[in-house]
Each structure stands twice: as C-alpha cells, then as structure tokens.
Length: 154
Ligand code: FES
Image (cartoon, rainbow, N blue to C red):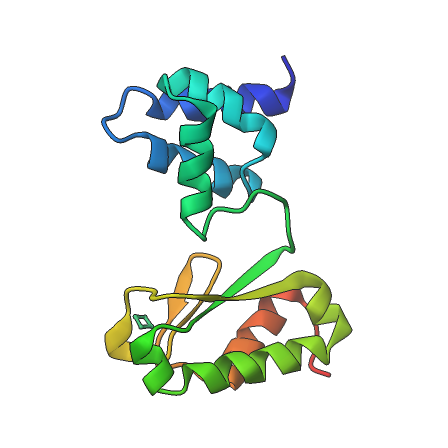
C-alpha cells in the first residue's frame, strides 16, 4: 500500500463511523491533498457502503470540491445577491484582469465565482484558502495574494 493510499485510508477511517461522515471526510481529503482524486471515489464508496455514483454525485454537487490539483492559491469571489449589490461583480472583474496581467501571479492563483460565503452582512466578500474577507477591495485582496504567493506587484 502506498503512502498516499495509507493517508487516504486513515482519513476515511477517521470519518466512516460518524453519522453524516461523508461530507467531513471529503473536506478532510481535499484539505490534505488539495483535491479529491477520482481514483479515491471507489475506496470512499466502499468504506461508507455507498455506490460510486452516490459519492461522485456528492462531490459534483458542491462546487467547492475539486477533482484535480489546480493552482496553489484559490481565490473565491462571492457573486450572490448581497455581494453583487455591493460591487461584487466589479470586484471579480478587477481581480480577474489584475491577475491575468501578472503572469507570475496568474500561474499560482485560481479565481472563481461562488454563491454566498455566509458573510453577507459584510459584502462584498471573497475567500483565499480558508480565510473569508468581508467589505474587501481588489487592492486588499491583491496585496494578500502577493504576500501569500511571494509574487511582487506588476
Ligand atoms: S451574498 Fe456574498 S457572502 Fe452572502
């Protein structure tokens, strides 16, 4: 058994006896590997006594689950109603063009729209990794992305 497979098995086993353990298990796998490999679905399904289709359906239902490695920094910009009303659309457009204009940053940052980060009172919102930023500007987020990536402006 490979080291990768042992880690996956220990994560699965830590959640398999929990009531409703599938979602926390999938989150833990994504936190550990950065994504949920399609090859892991069979092992997860077997452990939870579910079909592969049920596990795949759960993974594909939630947009925050990734099935490929992707880039090292995930930037999510809220596009739901409250944030849209407070400039979320402009925030996304500004960040997307600033990131695209900086090849080094573009190599590391994956930007996507999400629909509500649960912080509507502080719109517009965005998330980098596990950290949610409320009432945030494109400049603040770019500064944070540059610090986290080690990439300088420009
Ligand atoms: S609408 Fe953006 S955090 Fe809820």
